[in-house]
Amino acid sequence: MAYNLLKGKKGIIFGALDNKSIAWKVAEKAQEEGAVFTLSNTPTALRFGQIDELAEKCNAEIIPADATNVADLTNVFERSMEVLSGQVDFVLHSIGMSLNVRKKRVYNDLDYNFLNKTLDISSISFHKMLQVAHKLNAINEWGSVVALSYIAAQRTLYGYNDMADAKALLESIARSFGYIYGREHKIRVNTISQSPTYTTAGSGVKGMNALMDFTERMSPLGNADADECANYCIVMFSDLTKKVTMQNLFHDGGFSNMGMSLRAMKMYNRGLPDSDEIE
Ligand SMILES: NC(=O)c1ccc[n+]([C@@H]2O[C@H](COP(=O)([O-])OP(=O)(O)OC[C@H]3O[C@@H](n4cnc5c(N)ncnc54)[C@H](O)[C@@H]3O)[C@@H](O)[C@H]2O)c1
Image 1: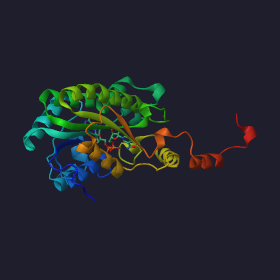
Image 2: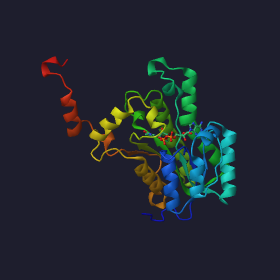
Image 3: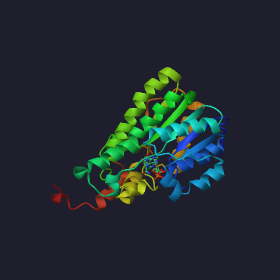
């Protein structure tokens, strides 16, 4: 059901790769809610992903960009303002990648060139995006910028590797830039910390199936899926959240405030050795 929450709003959505991507769901819902927008992803993603299908469905122009490249980002914002006839009202950063994860380099044996890439793609790209938008004055007053994060920024989770550090930096950038952008242009900057979700990026996480089962059992409301995450993004882009800024907003069914749940305890007990064997 649509509520016209984004009627008359313009935006840029970074990171839709295929129909499992969180950004893909955001694009579909943004259109349902009345927004017009452009889409951006890397030239490689445009070749191998299915973004053409989404662009056609949403009547959106695709503007290729490597989000680590300031010239590319400048082009995305300039072209978007041309295509959409003016400043945008919302921006979604739905971008993440770790070569250490991909190449199975564990956290105590990181390749530092890969680490630099992880941080550049997954976090510093957010700063670059905000700085470019700020310099071009590309976002309207009371606009909203959202990036997607994960609880590994605060808590250690097995297998999340250097993406944990990337998410910590991403959330810090949202606070630091949020202050400047809020003070000067009334623009809000937030991160949404999403449950583990089956997507191309998500399935790269070590032990994803077990992790999703665990978080499902631990969360009183269960894991949040990509569609539900998209709904939250839409609310954050709407005028209903005008005074929410510099926040990391957990969208995880309650997982972040749990210690142990009955459902997880039952599962844990099943695999537990006799109590006298516990060390
Ligand atoms: N899937 C999960 O479990 C989960 C949980 C919490 C947060 N997130 C975050 O959600 C965001 C979206 O991920 P997703 O799960 O939808 O997976 P996804 O693989 O569909 O999206 C990741 C996107 O990043 C893009 N990307 C990679 N390098 C890029 C670059 N240099 N420039 C521009 N784009 C680049 C990819 O092309 C892809 O479209 C990421 O920030 C991810 O960390 C995902």
